[in-house]
Image (tube, rainbow, N blue to C red; front, side):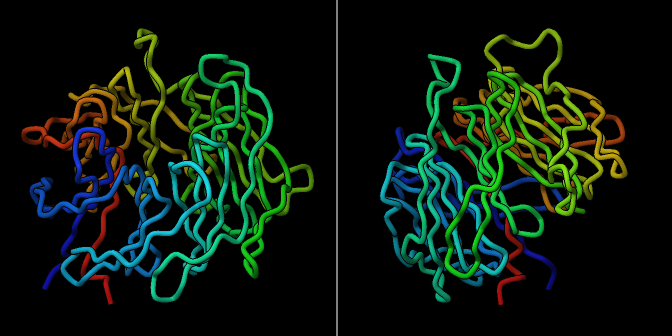
Length: 352
């Protein structure tokens, strides 16, 4: 029996009482079809444990945990409070021992223990960011949007677009506590939203939503002058892009040879080639996604098809992607779904 893939989509439930969706994937055709819906308040971000056995989701009440069955269906295990406002992002340690929630609304990072049965445990640490930003309409106070571990898992990188900083915390894997180690200060009013590491762990790509560019850093944990060094700054949009555009999401694709960025407002994806030796990006093309506000993008397992979650357009659009030509071609009709926000893909054949 060959590999069988499913996709889980998290959404906002302003217009629907069902927020978590299960899709079957036809990898050969590059299409997805909805199989089931699960009721959960505002599952705006979801992720899967490294063991592939459990799914974790943001919700109004905190974090919800689910057991993943052999066929991909979900069974809720528990919901744990994060002692704060609804989060927006989740990251998990490689050994599935701790879960980290990023809090956009209250500027709080929350670390929680994970039990062996997949349930979310107690809070082990919680830290509020402090400071003032520079844009009164939006970036006037801390807003944590993303957290990611360095490849060695020594540091937790916490993106705060509200104060134009990425705070680096030492992470204690014995007790789940964090301690400030250093700060990467981004350009004024740039709003660093997301950090993504290259497959070899030597480079980090930081998406800055308000300035619509990507900062590329080299990463060396043994460097004397600092682990991160800025080596490139490159725009995510064309010169004639819409003025209300904000860079939304970056992913690696094609075995790390390409990076793709979605641009909300401009409603495009930009495809870059990646020089694996230097980490530098070269822009290939920027093309429309046929949907409004592509909040999140995902690649099919075969790296031949691209999915765009168009949050304000209430749709998922599907494309065949040609990296050699920097081209995306619409692959079938749009899929209607209320406020899609992100997606995770799982090979259910990996579930043991």
